[in-house]
Image (cartoon, rainbow, N blue to C red; front, side, top):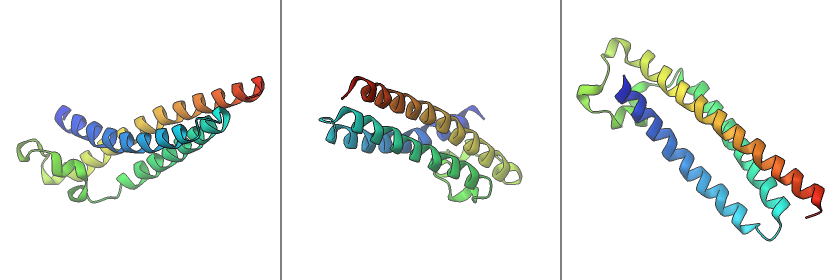
Length: 122
């Protein structure tokens, strides 16, 4: 079970890493306008949160054999077919929601920084 949890964590982490890189690039592109940069980062992070929540909702019904996690699991670490769908969907849902919480917190921090820049006049 811990191996499956680790693989689920790594697959979602990699996807979030690529999305975060894109958000970072947008923010660097707007770095000459700090308030707008953090507003864009907050908005895009919130959008990423919504996508993660939708993926968590979708994980309940997605065929477990078509998930990236299933492909990365070694055959000896895969659960039995009878419980595979339930186990994998539960793990993926849990992992997506964990990353959604983290991303939501990051979004709140970015919006707060944008508000701070607005108060100081930047």
